[in-house]
Image (cartoon, rainbow over all chains, first blue to last red; front, side, top):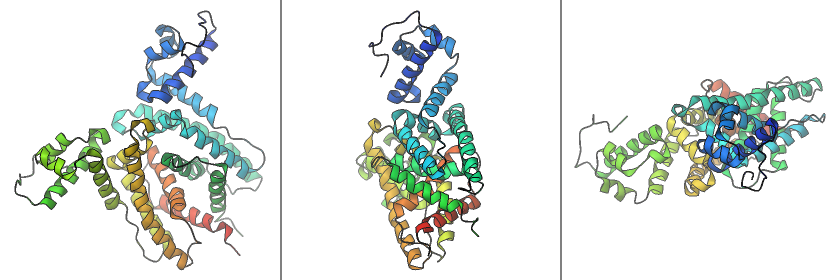
Amino acid sequence: MTGDGSRARRPGGRTRQVTERLSAAALDILAEKGVDGLQYEELAARAQVGRATVYRRWPNRDDLLRDVLARFAEASVPIADTGDVVHDLTTFLHAFAEASATPTGRAVLQILVRRSDEGDGLHRMGLELLDRRTDDLQRRLDRATEAEQLPPVKAPFVNMMLAGPVQWFVLRRSRPFTLTDAREIVELVVAGLWRDHRD
Amino acid sequence: MTGDGSRARRPGGRTRQVTERLSAAALDILAEKGVDGLQYEELAARAQVGRATVYRRWPNRDDLLRDVLARFAEASVPIADTGDVVHDLTTFLHAFAEASATPTGRAVLQILVRRSDEGDGLHRMGLELLDRRTDDLQRRLDRATEAEQLPPVKAPFVNMMLAGPVQWFVLRRSRPFTLTDAREIVELVVAGLWRDHRD
């Protein structure tokens, strides 16, 4: 947690430091109070800056939310390339599950399940976050196809087949999602993707 | 929509009719206003019964929600047995997608993504609904195993691999989920389930 008074005030801190502090405070608030709880006033108080500073950085709340959520998504779910696609997808899925199970991850999911009359802007924003990750995934999948570890596949479909079950699992909250769970899903999906490509 | 004044009052109607009317009104309210919007007073008004009647039927709100959601789940997602498990799972998934995309289906999902501090009772209720369906699915899968259409499989895992991607798809709301989409998921999962069982 940040902004609880334990940090020294840095009225002369540089822009980047202020942005870091604001982003961290925004993620904290999001985790504690959900999307609706993320308001300028509390954000300014927690980050120990004036409200004007927050408004200057994000003139409207949608920009603020988009920035904060993008930061969360990028920090939490990288896709590695060790040369072994099953291994890399397993690690990716496990990281996705851990991110989804955090209060902030749940807040992102709450954005997606909002009824459409409650703000389509936010819903689109949630989708943009997912799509940004899809581009990274497509590049990793293409390299696996070149290495003959996968047939040619489309990232949005693969992402749905991998991340959908994980999201389902995480929503149940019955136990933590393990690397073994991730590997079982990845192996099933990879075998299934090959179904029309066997000699 | 019911309870908008277009139905005649039936103060002498039998218990079953009143229950039907109450359930229909409750589903309407749930669809329009979400879980938090489902309150006794409005429910009584829409079903054109006294509040005492609603309280007699469901002494507490959790019972009311459980009944209404169970009714929704049972009505919307049957699992057939035509002898062809790929066909039956495809139909099942398509029906699940259609049910999930309705306002009420979205309300059920909202229950599952609530932050845990907002009411674990409701969350458990959502899970009970899912589990009830899992029993039906296990019976259908066991018959497919007997018919050598599937290896021995566990319904919760299969349900996660099938329903997870569908839920993911439906949350995007980019286009309707078709039977072709359902079949692609089912064929991939069935092929994947066989991966360790080939000679």
